Length: 239
Image (cartoon, rainbow, N blue to C red; front, top):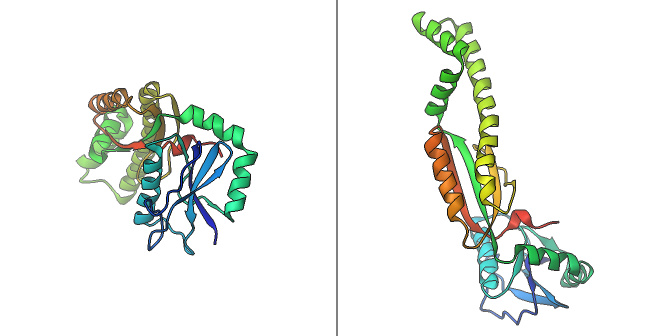
């Protein structure tokens, strides 16, 4: 049976017994592997580990419960070791590195910000900024839509202009939000968003981020932001 790792905690963690259940169907009991001044929070690993919603939520629940009473270095979902002994060996070998990271991330949380364009608004914005495209659109409209080749050419140019706008707006979003955070890194990739950022904040320091995001949407109505957090600071844990 392989060992599933939720996170690394500072200090000796008492027996978690049956009070905390983790991933798996049925959920598997969570235990602590104490090694020196660190402890790995683990459970057995199910034979087929997949990112099912219930397991993703269970992973985060375990981290939330343990971090209520101590600093925890969160591992991403799917962190697996071959055995409990191997986990203890890694804790012993890299104890200084884990302690340094725990010092840096104690009382810190992660917020993920994703941005997408409102399709109609960004098309209007592109036409307002690109006189040649605007003239081409007006010429096609005057010609009853234009020829097939005209429409294809116009569509290609518009798509290129929107992609260029995404690049500029990704930089705009980062420049507007980065000053509200202690650190910023690329967020998890997902389809449909042109930028995903992970921001490291103090536990009670989200208000400047939320205000900056709201102001960014007001000033640039073609931008739509989604903010998810607070989360364990997964993106800021070094390998």
